Image 1 (cartoon, rainbow, N blue to C red):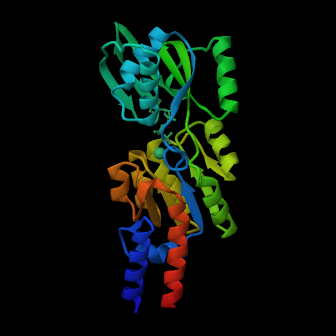
Image 2 (cartoon, helix red, strand yellow):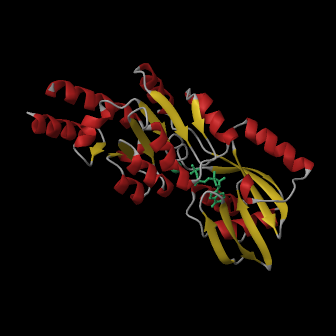
Length: 284
Ligand code: ADP
Ligand code: MG
């Protein structure tokens, strides 16, 4: 009777946009106690927009020239923001992406970099400090840009929380699940989204290489599902008892996951858990 119930459950799942890549995920999900989420692209749409700039448009164009080489959603926001302002991007050379930090390279004879606070060393002007404080309070993601070791600009990007996210998390909490956010973004940006969604536990500023270790640590005393979309989520998806990838995300994430949610609809997390509980109740 076991295989039949699993087959039926798997079939029902695919009708609801929940693809079980491995049959045993239906069993494991029924007993999951912790659900951990990546933020960008998983709880949020992952399509950030450039919404703040303290710095010159000329420098924005140069920074966009670097970001044109990056696949990161923040990079796309900065390139689109420069193009929307009608700026022409100059040529860039020797561009290197640094996972979890940002990108660097040469533009017009200057060494430029753009990324998070840890990636720049120079001091901010008072005007920049003020803008950063305001943006952090609003939960925007702040980027810092440097030329030859001096800060030349600060920028903000904003990403919308997925419309279905709040209801899904409320339902999981009602079911007694412990909810955790694990993100490479700053404490401030992560905290604002977590407060919106009622997530008490936030691990922010997490390096791509650290995500799987956090999942392992959670697994010491609980069964853990991890939901994510990015290349940097792949190890955490593989480490979790049940890895849940967004179908809107990267191929690497989907290949590392046990469950794939079509269209990245995170209501699928709650549906998948409900379905696994029904399936296991039938078997017992
Ligand atoms: P996440 O997708 O969870 O935000 P990442 O590890 O991809 O985590 O990135 C962590 C942080 O590093 C980002 O929030 C951003 O501040 C910075 N960063 C990474 N890549 C870029 C990039 N191409 N341009 C600007 N900042 C970047
Ligand atoms: Mg992500």
